[in-house]
Amino acid sequence: MRNCFLCFFVLFGLGCTSTSTLPQSISAMDFSNDGGGLVDVGRYVGVIALEGVSVEKAIESSLDSLSSCGFYDISQDANEPIVFAVYPSTAYHFNMVVGLYFKPNMEETLLKVIVQASTPLSFPGTTGTRVYDSMRIYKRLVEGITDDLSD
Image (cartoon, rainbow, N blue to C red; front, side, top):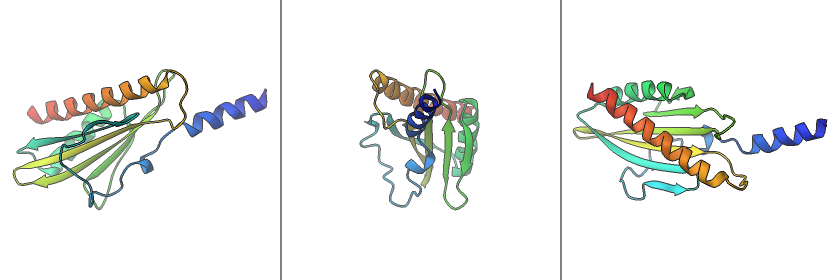
């Protein structure tokens, strides 16, 4: 019985993802909107332009949106305009990580959002769940940020 529990935790642990799986720098990041959407199973990427919004205000709004969406372990990079956060696993959903990358661009701030749902292990029926979860979280985050900035 003890070995069964150990196997379960090992398999579950292999299925988790962390913020280290996301790009750690914006230097080589492409902020064009080409190739956005679902780029891999469980990875959803999008770029939005926040017109008339400073990077600082965009980061502040993003931090609020992450908290209201249920993310925890929210961290802001000290050297670059990047925010990372973790969404917890539940009985029905895999854990997810998100990276928010901000770039000033004339009169707007470009925001690249990468949502990565875990698991490298594929069990029957999990692919659709990971795709749906990453798209759902992406939509909630973007709506939260844009709603907060429009108030």
